[in-house]
Length: 477
Image (cartoon, rainbow, N blue to C red; front, side):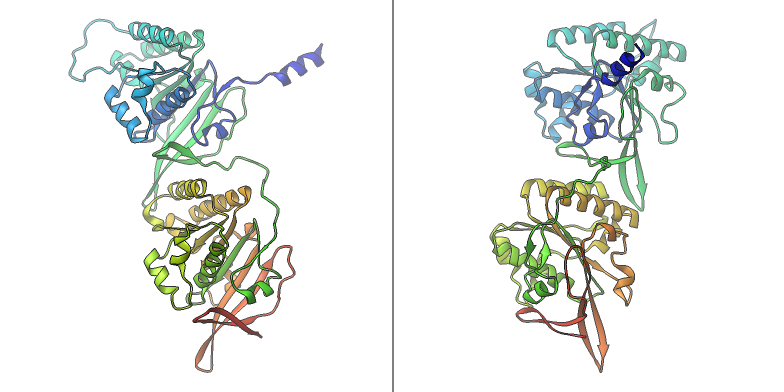
């Protein structure tokens, strides 16, 4: 009998409702608990209402009706939010897939006599039956209940509301206000125990960069990812890019790919490896950008797509500089095989930068990614922020089979002392070091292959020149 009970427990699983929010279902290991209460708590501007609204919209997209009952926002404001996020909420309302109920009290109204949530719940119950809704969002009930001016009554009303929603079998998302230091005020700390799933949102500013973060505080009866995850609100809704998988799912190295420089192909025993990550590191003026642009032009000429992320130069500046070594980036771009995207690292947080890159990868479907230069990524906020951005970007590329090529500006005389400067050596498969040496009144450029996993590469130091016809490796030391 004991064995049977254990077997039954192993087979029991929490029934979940997919949120449809990018990345959130992965964090929640499937979605919100079905027919239960999920609590979302956060301060102003953290995205509580947007998450609730998107939960309703994503349900409507699957022909699952939903209702959003708000005690704080106006209906027209919710429609405006949806419009800015490219959600046709009015269409769903006409199709009886979405219903917005505003229970907002005019701040100038004078309250007299007893009042409670009975009438509001009666309206909600009628809407649920008429739409056949299963998804319900209760937005900011704390705003309404504070008018009771009685903590015991507030708690009692929320208990009654929770019981009615649960008895009706509704998957409910409730938003309440909180802050970073205390998830819940003393008024509503009991909600944490009442809800089956509790999500905390906050917004922080570090090095003048603001970042929203999400953390699952509790998920009764289910596993979930409990780390903090930065997220952004984009024109496609909330977007989370979590690193939740314990196992790596990188593609194996593929065939050799020409670097665009025949002499370098020989040093690397055939060129770069498909699905690998290569770093070209060196001090200023060593030719890092010339190397990656040589590869970009070569790959584009073969009909393969390259996404070029530049954190240091504009398109006009880059194309002008590449004229001297005979590299025609404009021609490569005209073929449609090269997409150039530049931005200032400090212009936004790492999550916005990452989402921008992921979206372009999704839309453009490149075979190769160039990041020039990873050293500039420190200006996204900190060295840790740069590490987080690059690790997730490289991991994503390796998982979906994109070959990446990075440049890094070193400050030290010996580039081996600072391979990446951001502690990324473990995820980089090939490291090419460039340096300038002063001898007899002139500078000489040199190149060496520090490592190349799975390849028999040259172990010598070679001199090279940047000529009108590109890069020429001319000898060794």
